[in-house]
Image 1 (cartoon, one colour):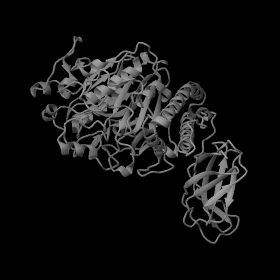
Image 2 (tube, rainbow, N blue to C red):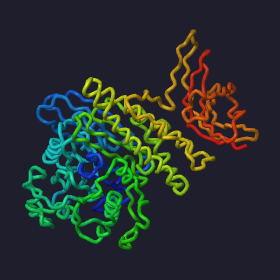
Image 3 (cartoon, one colour):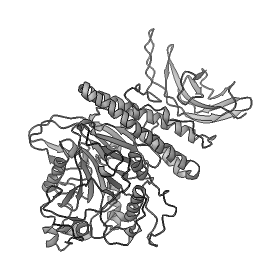
Image 4 (cartoon, rainbow, N blue to C red):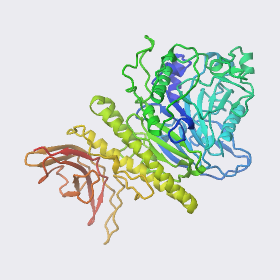
Amino acid sequence: MKKVLLTMLAAVGLTALAAVPAKACTSYYVGSDLTEDGSTLFGRTEDIGARYDKVFQVIPSKEIQEGEKWKDESGYTQFQGDYKDGLTKTYRYTACRDSKEANDGLFGEVGVNEKGVSMSATTTAGNSAEAKKADPFVGNSTGISEENYVDYVLCQASNAREGVEILADAIDKNGVWKAADGVFIADKNEVWYFEILSGHQYCAIKMPEDKAAIIPNCLVIGDVDLDDKENVYASDEVKTLAEAKEIFVGPQTDMEGADINIKLTYGGKGYDSGNADRIRAGQYILTGEDNTDIYTENYQDIFFDIPSRDVTVEKLYQLAGSQYEEFEDFSGGRPSGLGSIRYIGVASSAECHIMQIRSDMPAELATVEWLSLSSAAYSPMVPFYGALLTDVPESYKEEAYEHSDTSAYWTFQDLDAYARKNVNTVGEKIKAFYKGYVNKLEADQKTVDAQMMDVYNSNPSQLEQKATDLGISIGTQTVNMAKKLNAEVMSEDYTLDFTTDYNDINYSLTAKPAEPETPSTQQPQATEPQAQTVSAPAKTVIKKLKNRKGKKLQVKFKKVSGADGYEIAYSKGVNFGKKKTTVKSYNAAKNVRTIKKLKKGKRYFVKVRAYKMNGTQKVYGKWSQVKVVKIKK
C-alpha cells in the first residue's frame, strides 16, 4: 500500500484496504510435499498500478562502522534501525524496487541475499478499527514500514529465523509506521510468514511442508500456541494487550495448546468478498476443487491440501496471472450483491514473483528467483540465481518512471495493456505463449542446475560470474523476444499466427552473451582527425508499413531533427541474422522509402535508425521498435 493510497483511505475514512480492491496484492505458498519436484514455492503479485515502473537491482555490500544506524537511502522514511551485533559488513542482495522517480520510498518487493535468505513483501492486510485504537501505529518519525522491510532485513540476516528476529526487534524498539502487513522470510530449510498486526504487535509462523495457502489482503494467521517457540514467534504482549483492550478472541479450533486466534483478534472479521474470490480461485487452480463455502463462514483455516501433489512453477505462474478463465461461471455460488469479482491477474500488478527453494542444494544455488515485471497475466516470469548475482540485465535495472523503449518493465507493460484491450483476439494467445515459455524455462532449469552444480564442485570461485552471466543472458533474450512479439502482435497485418518462437531462447551456461536489441551506439574510432564531436541522433519511429502492388514495401518513419540520413533494415527472420538487408537512405529529407523485389506470402520484419555525419564517420541513433508486415500483393 503506497502513500497515494494511504491518503485516499484517510480522506474517505476507510479502515481496511479491502474497501479499495483495485489496490491489492495476493500472496501464495505451496509446501515442498505438494510440488512435483519437491521444491518449496512462495511469492506474491504486487498490485499498485499499471504504468508504475519497477526496477530489479543488485544492492552491493558495504562496510559499516560500530554504532552506525541503517537508514532509508531514498530519504522518504525516517526510520533508523540497529544493525545486528557484530556486523561489520552488510550482505549483498537483490531487490525489485520502485523507480527512484516515484519518490515513494524503497519499497523492496522481493529479493535474495548472498546467504540465501529470501523475502517477499508485502501483502497489505488492514487491521480492525478496534486494533488500531488499542495499539496505534506510531507514524513516520520513528516507525519501520513496508518501504523498509526487504532492504533492512536482507542486508543483515544470515538465515530465515534471524530475519524474523531482526524485523521483530525493529518493531519492538521503534514501532510500525502505518499499516498491517504480511511478509515471507525464508532460507533453504524453512519459510516463515510474518504478520505485522498493529503499532507494536506481530506474529510469525513457520509454514508447514504439507500445506498450501492463498493470502489476500487481510490477516490470515488463525489459532496459535504462543508457547510453541519452534513454530511461532510473536510479540510479548500480543495476547495480554488484546485482553486488556478487550479485543481478544480465543481459539476457534481444538488445536492443542492454542491460546489466541490472531486473525479475529486483530483483523476483527472473516474474509470479505474480494479476498474470498482470490482464495477460492487459487484453491481451484491448485486443487481442481471449488470452495464456495469461503463466502459464508466467518473464519476459514489459512491452509489447504493438494492431493495431486503436482504443483509446478508454471502452475503457480498461471495462478499469479489468472483472470478466472479456469471457471465456466465464477459467479456460481458467490453471494449476490457483493460487487465486481476481484481477479488475481489484474492490470494494476506492477510486478509478480515466485521463489523456488530446493532444500537439497547448496544455499548459494537453492533459491531461484522467478520475476515478472508487469502483470503475470501477459508477461513471463524469468529465473535468476538471486543469491549469486552481482549484476542484472540493463533493461531490468533501468530507472524509467516514464515510458522507455529500452526498459524491461515498459516492454512487458506495453503488451499487457494491448492484450487487455484485445482479449478476444490476442489476449488468450499471448497468455498461452508465455505459459508455454515459462514451462520451457522450468524444464531447462533442471539442466542449468546440473551445470551450476558442476561449477560448484569443480570451480566454486566462478559461481557468481556464471550465475550473473546466465541471468543477464536469459533476461536480455527474454526482453528481445518480447519486443519482437510486441511488434508482431501490434502489426496491422497480425493474423493470430506467431512467428516469434520461444524455443529459440537458449537458457543454459552454453548460451552466448545476449546483446540488447537496441544497444547504445558508440562512435567508431576515428581513422582521421575530426573537426567536432557529434551526439547521436534521437530514435525514430516507424509510422507505417504498407505492402504496395508488385511485391513492394513502403516504409514511412518519423523525421529526426538534425539527422543526415537513415538506414532501414529488413529481414524474413525475427533475429535480423545473416540474411538481413540494409537499405541506405542518404537524403534526410526523405522519410518514406520503398523496398522492392520482395517475396509474396512472406513476412518481413523492419527497423529504422537515423544517423549524423561526424566528418567521414556516421554516428548512429538507436534502432526503432521492430514492426512486421506480410507481402500479399
